[in-house]
Length: 120
Picture 1 (cartoon, rainbow, N blue to C red):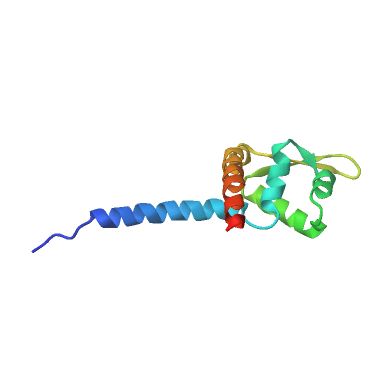
Picture 2: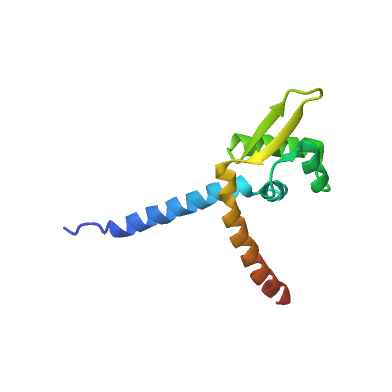
């Protein structure tokens, strides 16, 4: 009786885990506005109004929703100051700052590749 080859199963699981991790990462930064919001916060802490002005075309509802979701995911932090009206500031957490190298890599890849793609 022949023993089944388990090495192939291990490599399939490893590929599946990598694909799952990649899918998770992409779900965090995907969408029309998330990457733009994160990029704005790479420059430093921003108030809600500053973010809204720096992202032309975003609605108040969408910005609020995306900020809440990024906060839930641990990418940004929200600080409320006890003023009237309350002032709110958003900044990247350590997890969010970890995305900077990822975004830089993607930007470099896009600069190189998107030009090549549009030429074809």
